[in-house]
Each structure stands twice: as structure tokens, then as C-alpha cells.
Amino acid sequence: MDDFEPEVIEKLGVKLVIGKGGMGPKTTEAMKKFKAAYAIFTGGAGVLAAQAIKRVVGVHWLDLGIAEAMWVLEVENFGPLTVIIDSYGNNYYEDLRKNVRSKVPELSKEVVNTIKNVIKI
Image (cartoon, rainbow, N blue to C red):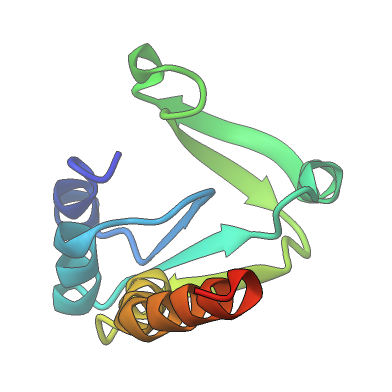
């Protein structure tokens, strides 16, 4: 859905998208431009989510598949949700990726040194 999300946000005026994975830079920019946010539901808590759904108001783009369709739900006490992309364009997953990648060279050196010490090279 990442390819379509910016257009959905713009054309439909969406302010909150709830999903199950990350979104890329185009969606992040759309969130910032149109003051929207992307949140994820707690992993492994599907029963909790289902209990909060009071009724299905509508479904759009079912031809994309059940998981990719846009579901309009009436919910009560739906959560907990974690905001992954905020309306300022901060993307938690992307920030985390950058942080981890920046540490890979140093961690690689540590691993090599540890191996050398263990096998006495």
C-alpha cells in the first residue's frame, strides 16, 4: 500500500492510517504535508483489536485483497497504538534503521576482534 498511500492521504483527507508494518519515504512526506499520522497496533494482539471493533461501516478496494483493502470501522477503546510516523514527518522505523546501520562498522570490528581473541589469531 505504500505506493498508493500518499494519494489516499491527499485525496481522501485521511488523518490516521493504522497498519501492521512500516511505510516508506513517500508516505512519510505525505504525512508531513497533510498533517496525518501512521500508527501500528500491538503485534500479537489481534483478539484485543477484534474486541474493539463494533461494526464494519464499509470496505473499499477489496479487489486488492482483504489485507490490503481499506476498512472503515466503528471502534471503541481501540488500542494500544504506537505512532510510527507523526505529522511532522518523523519516522520511527527509519530513524531506528539509520541508527542501527551507523553502528554496524564498529560492531563488525568488535565481532572480528572477539573471534580473533577466541581462536588466538
